[in-house]
Every structure is written in C-alpha cells, then in structure tokens.
Length: 462
Image (tube, rainbow, N blue to C red; front, side):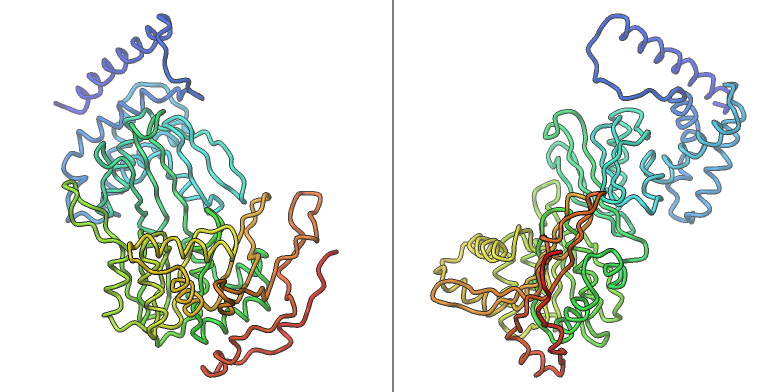
C-alpha cells in the first residue's frame, strides 16, 4: 500500500472515530471527564500510524544509531505531514511534528517536561492529567496522552529499557530513565481510574555541596563538618520523609569519599551518581513472570562484603537488609552511608529496630539496640518545608546506651523559631547547639581534625 493510500485509509478511520465520539456525547453514555481536548488528536494519530507503517522495522534495527534514527523519523514525518491535506499553520505543523517525534523517539507528551531543567518531578494522574513540580510547587500542565492505551505504551517503553515489566500479574514497578531519574508506575486494577506514573527527575549535572549551600539546605560550616565526618569514616544514616531530598544529600555526602577508596553502591533502582574512579554499582532485581529470580537489597549487601569494599553505600534501607547493614558497619566496614525513611532522628532508631526484626532472627531488643548504637555514628535528618524548600534539620550523634535506651545528642539543629518571611519561606538556618560530639577522638585517629569553633553555641530565635 502506498503512502497516499495509507493516509486515505487512516482518514476514513479518523472520520469514523470522530463520529463515534459525537454519538457517545449525544447518547449521554457516561465517560471519564476530560480536562481538555486536543483539536489535532485525530490528525496526530493518523500521521503517527502512517509513519510507523512506512518506517516499519527500521525503528528497531540495532545497527541504526540514535542520531540516524532521529534523522529518518523526522524526514519521514515531514513527508507524511506534507501529503496530509489538513490546513495547518506553520506553528501548528511544527508542534505536531515535534509531538509525534517525541512519541516515537521518546516518551510522548512527557518529553517537554523531562527536557525542562526547572521541572523536578512529573506526575501523571491519568492519561488526561499531568502535573509537574517546579520550585517545590505543583502545577497542572496542558500536556496529555491520547488515551489510556497511549499512556500504557509509554510506561511499557520506560520499564522495558531497564529489564522490568508491568502487567496484571505485576501491576506495580520501580524503574529508572537512562539519566537515573526515578520512575514508579502502577496500573489497573490497583489504580482505580487508570494508570499512574511518577518520575522524579535527576539533574544531568548532579548537585554538589556548593549547590546545597546555595539553596539553603545546609550551611557552609555544617557542610565542612559533614565532609570531615565522611573522610573520618563515620557511619552515617540520612533520614527524612518522602521527597525530602535524602538521595541528593546522600549523593553529596558520597562525593566526599576519597577517590582512592573502593566503593560499592547498592540500590533498588540505580540513581546515585558518584564521580570516584573505583565505584561498583549493584542494582536489585524483581522476580520474573514466573515469580523467580528476585535479588533483594539484602542479598546484594551480603554479597558486597565479599567484594573487598572500603565503603558500602546503600540507596535506601527499608527491610531486613538493615540487619546485614548493621553487621557490615560493626565488622570493619566503617564509613558506610545509607538512607532511611523516618520523621526524626529518634524515629530512625525505632525504624531500624523494626526492620532488623523483619529479618526473622530471634534477637532480644537490647541486643539490637546495642548493635545500632555501636554501628551508627551520625544521623543526618532532612525535611521538606511547606514552601517546597528542603533543609537539614538535625545533625545528631548516636552517643551510646544508657540502660535499655540509645542516647542521642543534637550537634546542629534547625532554628524554627526564626519564623517565615512574607512569601512563606523559612528564615531559620542550621545552628550549632554548643555540644561537642564524642566521636572527635575517632576522627582524630583517622587523621581528621575539626576546629572546636565549629561547635560554638549559636543563639536561636530572631
């Protein structure tokens, strides 16, 4: 069939589809409420299908480079659009061409927001509802998928590239984009109103400590202190709620690790971007369609101990892997760093204790707490404020045991008493409590010294 014949046949289908849509509207058949209708949706669907038919296997030829594929798609796209008789302005023609190219070469209507460096998160609440986060605030955008099937194809394309799958037998999936951006998808029947997709973007150029100081996440003094803690091989837990910026902080802390050390990173979906030369990256694997082949974080932590690591960096501890991580920290693998979901430094200890119990090992609670107090040196807690900014709120030392209780002392605290400005932004900063940490001797034994003036008491309040 020639290109002209394909277009003619597609137009007939387009007309039939439009007629069916009008019939549904007149008949009062209940449909999902739409937030807007793309006047060129039928044209894009026609051109898209015609383009796929004309290019065929060329789209999947492994010998074709990405640049060659893009060139072929754009050339064929212009030819197809030129043969369609629908009257279009130059602006509309350019926009339609870009949207179809994005759909074939990328992730369809998500592409403009993935390219936008100001967007930090993309949330798809259904095929016709896309929200983005900019500067900590949520905004609904005009982009939308053609229908539920279009959204599902895009989700399948994302997860297939990292060897994952999502279907009725496995309706939830964690994946990542090639740049490390975190992806979560959940489909019916678990999501009632259609497929849901969340993408937490990672900057192409990872944030460094100077960026976090500039954002107000921490101060220069606390950044220097944390750098000495990492160089002095203290075991650090980074805690906070969802979206608090734990992974970004973990990435920055990991950048302080000396370049000559052998680092093993372990994650559910690879996100960390370390620049040291000697980094070995491990990623967990979900079960296959037969329910076999799963490799958990805990398995990777145990395996990493046989890889002669100087440091172990775990993206997130959320299950029985906590026991293996504590064992590693207590058996000579000092300087390990990982993140934990928690609401406060004290809550971190309860969370770790609970996760250790998930391992099914019959340990008395006091024994677990002794392991935790011996293994963990510092808790760095981070929060996301109501204005969308993210701040370190606690840098807390794990002192030891008093009876059956793990004792903590705050070295730095966020000054909440400073209040907010007229725009709702927090005026406080991270301030020293005046307490000197007891691990200074441990740092000194590693050749790392901290200026005592770092711990001078800073007055809280306005």
